[in-house]
Length: 330
Image (tube, rainbow, N blue to C red; front, side, top):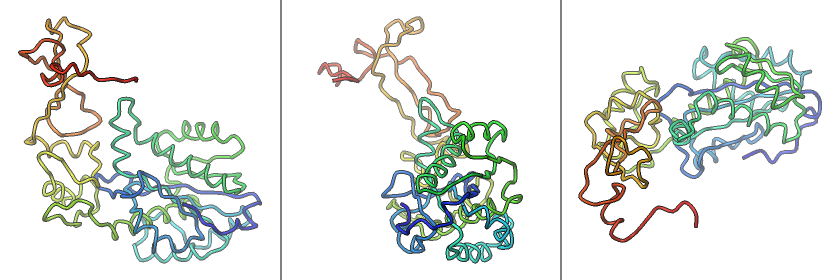
């Protein structure tokens, strides 16, 4: 979503932008019931938190950006922006309200659903959190450029190796000068502002979140959502289900989740094809075994030899007797 307000005149002059994130570390997050992954909002849409977030609840990892004309840079440094982690919640809220009404500033957010994070990190060709973060940052740059803003310099709080990240951004956007640095949110006011945008967006969404699950005795007192928080650990233990795992706000790809499933149900997946290497299985039968529901990117599927009364590749008798096979093409 983006603002319907006309592009300000200053956006056609050389502009700078800062990018930062909030919620990269939590194991708990918030889902977006109507949207699979993305919420995008522009500064002049002041009704965003009154309307949009009731429909699209923010996810645990939020990327925010703040941009303005280069000529406004000195004024920006007087607005008391700072790394959001060093500010109290009341001060962050105050600064965010101020920048929302400042016509010389633009901002945007990209909110990523925890289900998307886990799905990407556990898929066959895994996408790690750094890559997801890079894609989100580049997506914000692309969208702001697409609005017609003349970006000439972009400052980014690094994720991973700063030099490699900067080269990656420069190759994608050769006309823009990128500065990628550690603790950029405390070095550059434009990144500090982006940090506030991201953090307040996530905090407001958490406060307004409603569980989509209907199980009994569920509550929202999960603390910070970070793995080391005792309140978060207690919440995970209380909301664990032996079959279905955790509610969908949990990043089940995090290794933090694994210990909670030691006593959960075992799942066996029927194989659809013969084992190509029959040296360990003379009958060509196999099944894929999930020893637990402890979903983690480090866990690998086990292939176990399973004896079967039926012939073939170890699939269920129901499918074999009816000559049913998996098709990848029609």
